[in-house]
Image (cartoon, rainbow, N blue to C red):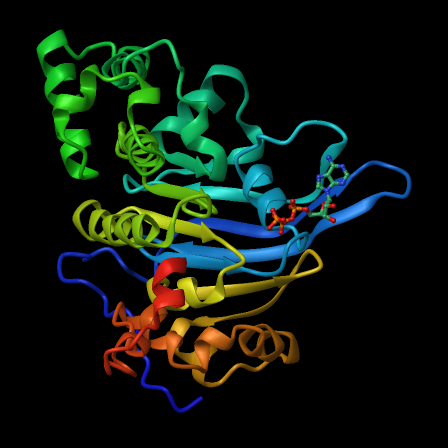
Length: 315
Ligand SMILES: Nc1ncnc2c1ncn2[C@@H]1O[C@H](COP(=O)(O)OP(=O)(O)OP(=O)(O)O)[C@@H](O)[C@H]1O
């Protein structure tokens, strides 16, 4: 692995990438009570630090989504939390055991303190409501004290923050591209300024260019607003680029947790080494693009190609 690697430095203004946890996950297990039962998440303990981007990596089926849904109590039977707990530590100094929340408290908590963006999120916008109405709805429900003008200003601000022209507030979801809809979902997740954002494959369905733009936006927003992120994907090169720390999950367990640079340069667990070596992009020329945004292979051969008539015809 001799390719020069660029890792994120803590951006200025992220005063809150600290050693203090915002979420503590302790001995957390989830089973699917089918026959035979599936132990999808097995005794996971993790700390999410205030303001950090924690990448959760691992191959398909290792339990990443189950952990995310389990933490936010979005799992339905046959899933069952069989051990452990998750505790939220607020900026104001109080602690909330997520397993004790129910009903309206749980719903409010989800928007207010922990918000989520899932892979298919862009398709979950209501097709018959304008973007403005959907953002406004979150504010009306959770910030009843806000007047109409303040809500409108907040909607404009939110769209600007995620790089969407506020003129689009009047648009219906089908009038927006997939990338824009996903940005709107991120805006919606940020509406109440949560302290934690859980993102499960938030850009997987998008093409690479749009994906990179959105990732840049997420890291910028984190620097501006100081929330912590659990970023879930099977795309380890992507995590190496954006994460402060990375947890590697295998068969329901966290097998390694380290800062991104250490995980890349000194992987300890054989599975982490295998996972790293399964991405040719990390060792080949294209690795530069993934980790630095500069596509070295684009400069490898700049000699103009001479096409014969047949080839041009094919073009
Ligand atoms: N409703 C269900 N019933 C039974 N088993 C399930 C159910 N949902 C998920 N599983 C199993 O739980 C395990 C963890 O699945 P999970 O979707 O959390 O993995 P993942 O790492 O998020 O995968 P992916 O990256 O493909 O989304 C897998 O073995 C999966 O087959």
